[in-house]
Length: 310
Image: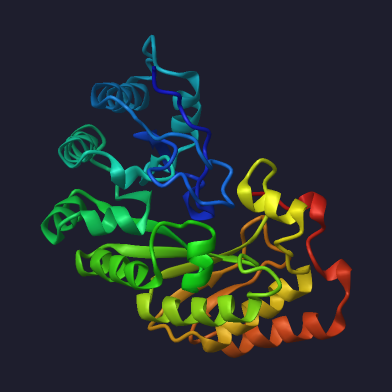
């Protein structure tokens, strides 16, 4: 089966990056809330990846295009900031280590002005790498890993079949940091449903504090048709939280977190309220903003459903 180039799913901060697909899908395709549930992982042939890097370099230096390279590659290169590369797809660190080294080395040779490479990674894939391997990747400019934690509550992690527990998430984040990488961790408001809401938020704050990432971002659960969690909702066994309850979960996470220096954001399109700041410095300001909106209970202060996105 030929490699199917994935659509671009990226963190907001990677908007101006060059997107370089290494994989399609995720090695852990069992998360019951995810639209990629049940879709198998594809590993792209390293020769294809190297040719795409060569083509981007040729295009940037001389404006030439190469047959066989998708048009989207050149469109992205035209808008690129020239500084950052994002390795696709949702689990690029699963790419075979020797081939990943080859790709990063080739990037450095052909596009030496690149300042930083980024990728999504599962906690399990970080744990599979040795400290030496992670340090070698860091030396080749793999500078930040985006980790989907989703929840710090082990009951929630088991329920959604995340594939790791909270202790493993903490271990993975600290292992990446020990290699000199930055970490950006995402959590999902509402993933515990109404019944597990408070515990989900408090345990998420606990695990975030122990992982102590450079960046943390909150998303709000969107039930995707066809996923097991969506079916649970249809069957009445999972009750989603309300929009204002998602803000109350944010309050619990921010109030009970303890970071060294973390940029925390709820700017993702799935959220009902865009909020950002550096914790702990901006904790009081962020909590005051949340409390004000929660107390007013004005639905017009929230992002409407039709403007929310995955």
